[in-house]
Image (cartoon, rainbow, N blue to C red):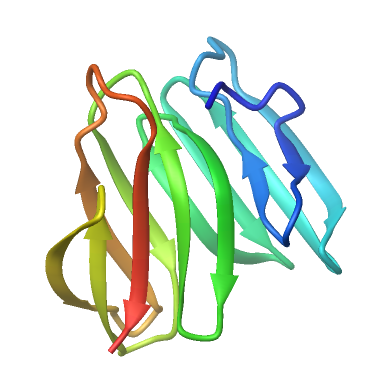
Length: 137
């Protein structure tokens, strides 16, 4: 998976691609209509952030490129790529427990805070895109 040159785009099967961890200057795109919602993306080497209908959905530090991002009734899944290890924060249901899988392996259960945010670290240095899946338990 390469960086998303359009900053955000819709893929087949209800997935989206967003972010570009290779940009040296911050770029953003607001009010992007996709899958019946409006998305806002800000991205560059230091940070990538995605909002859906004005609500927080994804953030990484440093910046990442994300593919096959799909929300479901009980979680979300995506592939993430970057130049170095990243801290990811995703927006889910508040005060809910999820099982988190990175690279196909469970890293355990985590509970979202009252704002619905869940944070995790992903090792990206020297790897291809890493699959992340978060499933409500």
